[in-house]
Amino acid sequence: RHCSIEQVGKGYWQIRDGQWDVENRMWKDSMNGTYVNSDSVTQNGRLLKSGDIITLGDVKLKLES
Image 1 (tube, rainbow, N blue to C red):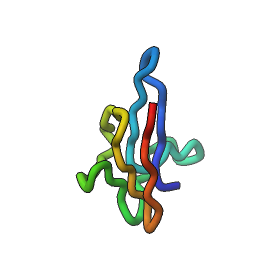
Image 2 (image 1 turned 60 degrees about the vertical axis):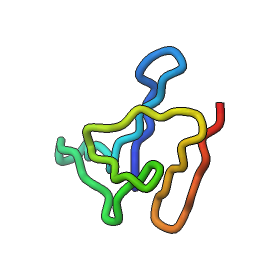
Image 3 (image 1 turned 90 degrees about the horizontal axis):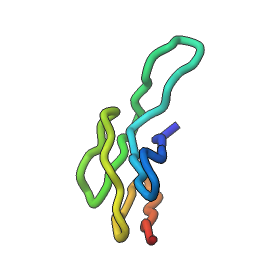
Image 4 (image 1 turned 180 degrees about the horizontal axis):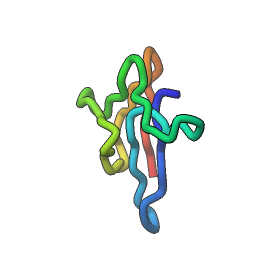
């Protein structure tokens, strides 16, 4: 439950920290945070672009188009 990645348009993706909790009908932030290029991501989200480095806990992912 680190983050949510959502398509927000043709070819556009957004990452948001945490996930929607269906049972409690509220957004729940992750415990350790979500980072893109070392910048913290909030539940408001951030658009992703090719070359971004996503950090979730001790895992790093590189986004490539």
